[in-house]
Image (cartoon, rainbow, N blue to C red; front, side, top):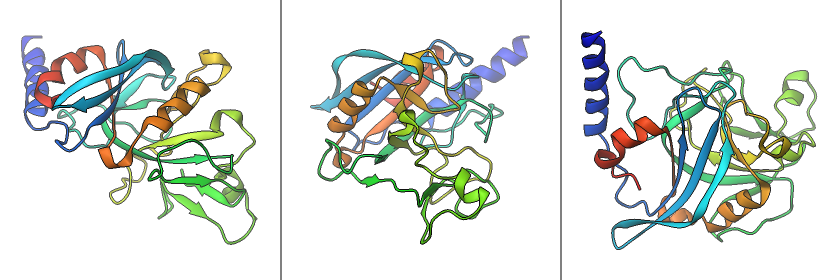
Length: 241
C-alpha cells in the first residue's frame, strides 16, 4: 500500500516538474471534473494580462465522455503507467491541448478573422478508422460518398449536436497514434445537457458560440481538462490559471 502510494506520488511529481504552459499562450479554457469517472465538468475562460491569468465571465457546465476521462495525447506529459485515451473507450482526453479550427453547417459564424472555419458539405469526412493513413483528419472527397465507409465518416449527418464544433488537438497531426482516439471537439450538447458524450466536451449552443467568438488564434489558445485532484496537484508547477 505504502509503496503504491509512493509510486503514484513520484509519477505525479515527475510529470509536474517536466512541463508548464507555453509562455506565449494567453488564452485558456479550463475544464474541471469531480473525478476520473465523471462525465460532467465545469468550464471557465481565462486570459493572461500582465503575466497573470484572469478569469473572464462566470463558469458554465459541460458534459464529457460517458465513462469519464483518461490521459490524452496533447502538450502535457503523462504519468508513467497511466491509463491512456483510446479509440472507442467513451472517455474524454485529460491534459493540456491546443485548440483551433471550427467546422459547422452554416456558411459562416461569428469568429476572429484569423480563426479557420469550414462549412462542411456531404463530401467532408472526419476519419475515425485507425487503419486509415488519414486517421483523425478532415478529408474532403472529390466525389459524393459512394461506400458505407465514406458515409459513416461524413461530418454532416443532419445532427444538431454536430452543427458547430471546435477542434481539440488530442492525438492530432503531425503525430497521430493509430487507435489513440480521434474526432475530439467542443460541440453542442444533447438533451439540454442530460446526455454524456463519446469523448468530446459539449455545452449549451449559445455558450459554444460565445466561446468561439472569443478565441484569438494569435494568442495560442489552450484547453486544460483535468479531474479536480490532478488540477490542484499540477496547478503551480504547470502554471495553470
